[in-house]
Length: 352
Ligand code: GLY
Image (cartoon, rainbow, N blue to C red; front, side):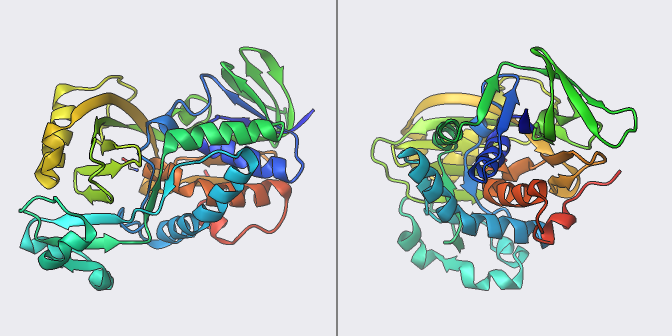
């Protein structure tokens, strides 16, 4: 019998599977589609606790995870021999109206860049940009490349990846304290421990406060590879990849699981992006897509224990799933193995 059965093969489920497998656990991951083809595949991959202005315990979690990233990426690249597309590009938040300077907290003073120093950060920004904030420790990773590496790493550790398997029900024992099995499209599955990592679709399985917030995105191609920084402003982020692709994101829409890109969604992203980095106007559009972020109250993921002794939660990462993958894997692995997890885990525990 498998030791741990993970429902959801996105970045969170796969990252936990890999860490558990490195400790010798027999792990199975079930995904109703192909692994990672939910929010992971859609994400721009910003590692941005500072630029996103996370606060309180979430900021602490985000910074810890960002700081783990280089080690985590090395581990995955050692396991697979593949490049994850991690790039310590830094993130720049441009300011176009004087009043915006005073909207940032005093501790951001060290990040301020004035107009005369802009070219040092990035050339070609709009003349409207008066200055901005430079977060040099924030970074990015190519989420689609990372996804392929995670799948490869999981396979190399004999994690059993079952794609195209839908979980219909998580069935509890009569005593109500433990899970007895899963009912799935491939029959009954049993394990020593279960983990729910189902992102925006969590509510279909459990009555947890996680709901979808849609994000529309597109990419353009920059043959000159002229952009070297992530640009992050209200209503738009612009994320260059090393191959010349530039990702523009993202809308935030509460429309359930309504699929598709809308004309206004794409128009707004392009207008906002061109207003900050005018060269985008002449770049060719490569692709448009959309995804569903798993929103949880106060943007706090639900991590750790559930109402069942043998079921754990790792869901509701909202805008920060890519960022929080390494720390989530570390904390949940400690929790499932029965060690002493970092006390921060308690701050994210869900109790009904
Ligand atoms: N992480 C950025 C977003 O969710 O749009």
